[in-house]
Image 1 (cartoon, one colour):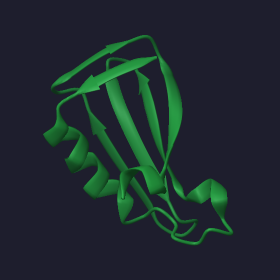
Image 2 (tube, one colour):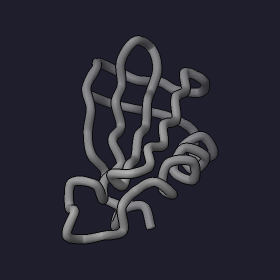
Image 3 (cartoon, one colour):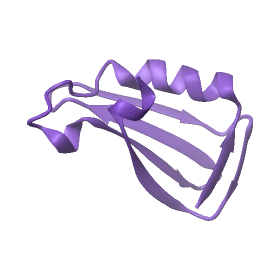
Image 4 (tube, helix red, strand yellow):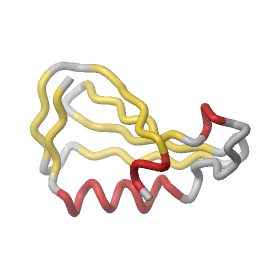
Length: 77
């Protein structure tokens, strides 16, 4: 999977989703942001177990293949 999107688009997505990402390190699986690519769009999701935030875009992206990956919250701070 290869995803290409503008910096502005990525920062907008991170701002929209990061509020819902868990800050609790004991809930390790919820401290990540899910990036899923497929159907000519990118979906980015974050949750803390109570709140869910989802951002979808098909604008300004160039991508190859389909798939998903997790990005740790430490990476996007």
